[in-house]
Picture 1 (cartoon, rainbow, N blue to C red):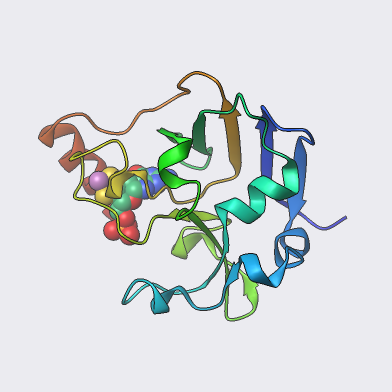
Picture 2: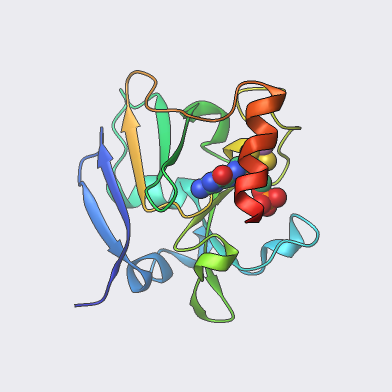
Length: 160
Ligand SMILES: Nc1nc2c(c(=O)[nH]1)N[C@H]1C(S)=C(S)[C@@H](COP(=O)(O)O)O[C@H]1N2
Ligand SMILES: [Mo]
């Protein structure tokens, strides 16, 4: 059995446990080869969130997208409508599964993110180490930092 890189649960027709090969097999119209085309300096290949949602069959009641990173217990919950078309999931680097040092197994990425804590969809919502995506009618778990001190502390921890 190939390792599961992403679980998708909640308000979806087909709750799924996806491997790297499953993500790579999503329709090429839903794939972005080389995200540096969209965001300078960013690396890797991505699948559009819209492609993932089609694969699992997002239900109409799904209004919130929660990105879970169990590796470091980081979670962000954002209104689905705002990222449905532009959200990306980076999952591959140089043809291989995205390594943890680049935010693997999956890294959520919004190309035109706003400054940290300026909005619901901010840079802090670019969750690294994503291994579980949950769709819900109500807001899900979110432990993004709320103030400067908490934000600085998080980045200090990240740099260790
Ligand atoms: N899993 C995880 N994802 C995370 C974080 C984190 O601590 N853990 N920090 C967030 C914050 S606060 C920011 S600003 C961005 C930073 O992304 P960068 O490492 O590419 O600069 O990652 C976000 N994603
Ligand atoms: Mo942030």
